Length: 414
Ligand SMILES: *[C@@H]1O[C@H](CO)[C@@H](O)[C@H](O)[C@H]1NC(C)=O
Ligand SMILES: *[C@@H]1O[C@H](CO)[C@@H](O)[C@H](O)[C@H]1NC(C)=O
Ligand SMILES: *[C@@H]1O[C@H](CO)[C@@H](O)[C@H](O)[C@H]1NC(C)=O
Ligand SMILES: *[C@@H]1O[C@H](CO)[C@@H](O)[C@H](O)[C@H]1NC(C)=O
Ligand SMILES: *[C@@H]1O[C@H](CO)[C@@H](O)[C@H](O)[C@H]1NC(C)=O
Image 1 (cartoon, rainbow, N blue to C red):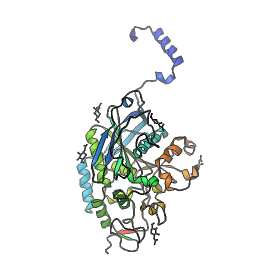
Image 2 (image 1 turned 90 degrees about the vertical axis):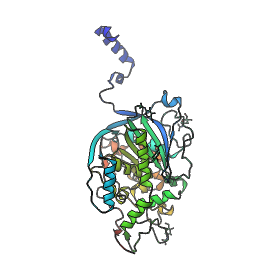
Image 3 (image 1 turned 180 degrees about the horizontal axis):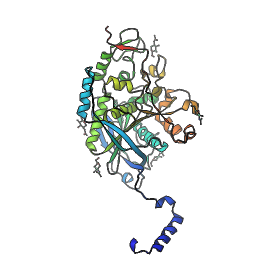
Image 4 (image 1 turned 30 degrees about the horizontal axis):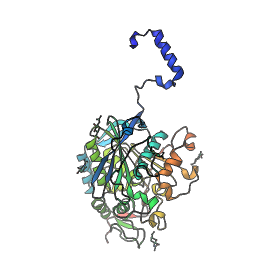
């Protein structure tokens, strides 16, 4: 009907409406969409035997009806992926045999999370946060009004492994995999035992979690003094640790479900470290919260290092000794809980909230909990960033970081 309106009448109608409607109503919705809208689609749980379980979010009017989706600000993100999974595996195998391998990386630019916006970090943190808690219990953040979630699998408190959520845009073009490592619950609930703890200690300790002579080590590579056998460490990790294969299985499952999607991976704590390793492997955008240092693990696993890791962003606060790599020593709360969280170096970009300086927080393992970051840091403007004309603190990197500097790693014999 529009063409039949006289130009003056059209102008009149526009002017008439503009009195009553906010001005943005008349802004075109193109050419730039600067958010993507996500809805929760599936739950996942991965057990140490590397079984991957998925549960669909039950159909519920509120999921597809009027409740608003999660609207996340986006920005172009440069990704670097290996030319194929096979080429990556081959380069990795060569590296494990001590040979150098060249691997072709393909650069791409995809819509990724806009990590310069506080809103992005807040929403993604909530999406990883909910991965800890059963729906409708205390501490669950309502992402929108109602999700209508019933009986997801893998939520038993003493389940080992990883679990979390899968969010997708309506057209399946972008999918967010949210990963939580169950062992991180020890912050609130006391240490979990079994595979999780062993995996943590293999990946994040200097030498098989040998904190002192009274510890039961997770591998047998200690060679006296501060000497540790490097080959022994790598063999133990590759043979025993399910941490990385669990993640790649999960990732591959999701690419089967959403073959044409751009994937983003997000995670908290151990789930964040795993997310980062998947980001290195598959070249996808990653945002992690309070992750223990994963760079040493990537090296010990012989993951071919991509030409750039700018697609990986870690978000943490300086009072968290786990992310800062200071939760070590025989009397630290990590050691007392049976964890040797000794690594401190991370791959990728870092957004560090200096809660120790700017909020006068004391270093305390309880600040590792994602709820602290959501409720006390990301939920309101961060003054120290705003002083710099930014919404979030400026990007840092740890390129000169050294892990386990006291130790000598080499082919030491017993
Ligand atoms: C979340 O939504 C449920 C159902 O609408 C409501 O009962 C609950 O109080 C909400 N929780 C919070 C923390 O707002
Ligand atoms: C999105 O993927 C789901 C599978 O998880 C499928 O059932 C649905 O039809 C897909 N939707 C579109 C628009 O492709
Ligand atoms: C997930 O991947 C595993 C192997 O990686 C496979 O056995 C399983 O069938 C997959 N599950 C789904 C739901 O695709
Ligand atoms: C060894 O470490 C444990 C746990 O951190 C601690 O309780 C114990 O006192 C330490 N033993 C010695 C001899 O330092
Ligand atoms: C935050 O801390 C930094 C030092 O790390 C200081 O320069 C800045 O002024 C502080 N800002 C606020 C708002 O407290």
